[in-house]
Image (cartoon, rainbow, N blue to C red; front, side, top):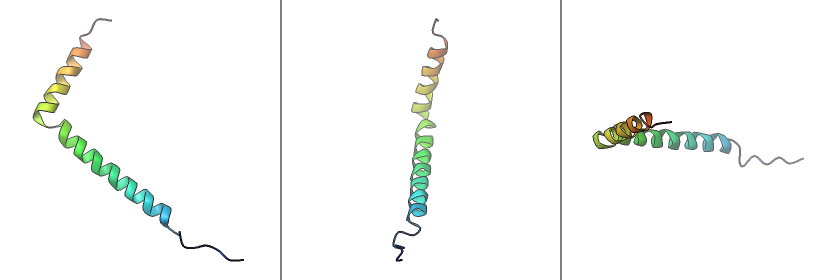
Length: 54
């Protein structure tokens, strides 16, 4: 019986690359959200939503 071993470990490498890409995207989004203008606009948006009548 012959076994295929050419793809051995490939799924682990794919998970590692996916995790790395997700962390990089999270870091970029964190920088954007914490920048001055974007942070101020998000704060205004949240305050406006909290003051909305129900």
